Image (cartoon, rainbow, N blue to C red; front, side, top):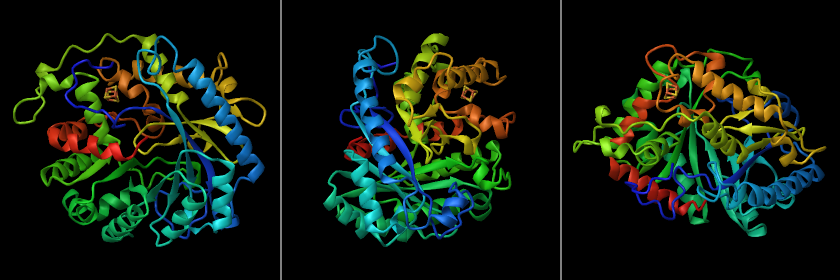
Length: 432
Ligand code: SF4
């Protein structure tokens, strides 16, 4: 899949490249807000405000499991002959923690210290609501040096883009990076046409070169399995495609993830740049022949992606964290059983168990893609395998005009190579 003649030079950029063992941990669920797509657990939200969910000895146990697993990855996965990772592919060169899901900025400094001390890492990401309490992370970083990032849950119905911009600029002054995350809900689409969204919710951020993450709303236990915020994929794709068109047209210095990344992956890893017309449109007739669908190969690569994105919940149950639209953790909240509990077993034992949960998930993903009427003959099956498509299909089949591959949105971003090149440069400062 590594293209010897890529369109883009991605030296020093991590866009569309997995080189990190990402471990999300369920550290905090408190938050004063009530965003429509929120995944925080009401029990913890109401009963565990201003304190960590996981006791310090358990956080230390998580860390010892993760470091042991990272060593195992370096010895066994980075050295394999075939797969996404290995001698002939990418390698995992570090690990990071992402502390989720609540507003960590409201934790007292001692609680943040406990997290940083128990789970030290070169890269730390904290979820937060828009906040003026950046100083907490600035001071935390002084006490526990490293690279800090904030995932800022941004609800354009309630928050002002100007405030987000000021927050991000203030963070940068203190060497803390971060980006807003927008969940695509019924309420968002009712409140914003694509034009209004781009003008009001993106425009003020459009000059500061920030990532902006878009995520699909998915019903879950914490949301009472409510479908009321679900947007049909056809409507979502058309709304997002128009948003993408306008962002590119206005040449905003903004990096929409993950969907802008997909545009680069298709152009380079899938060699689609040979089909670009001078006007930037992709001539679908000129697309290169798709690689033959090699089930074992796709299974191997998808497994590698799953191995590098994991989630540990408050019980120390281990789950896969999917690289999907919105980066969903595939836990009980979304109807997925854990791979096992890391109190009793090492992570490497759980992920390699023959016939275990990981194996069954992989088989289910592949079976779903191969047998779905839309995917069976589609050239992008190998790409979609790692993006948790079956998760979304649990709730709503994409049996209309569009599919969970979001192709029309990707095509809009593919039209501007300067826009994508700028995005690639923007990823250089991230470092992971
Ligand atoms: S979800 Fe869409 S793009 Fe992905 S394999 Fe299926 S039909 Fe193709």
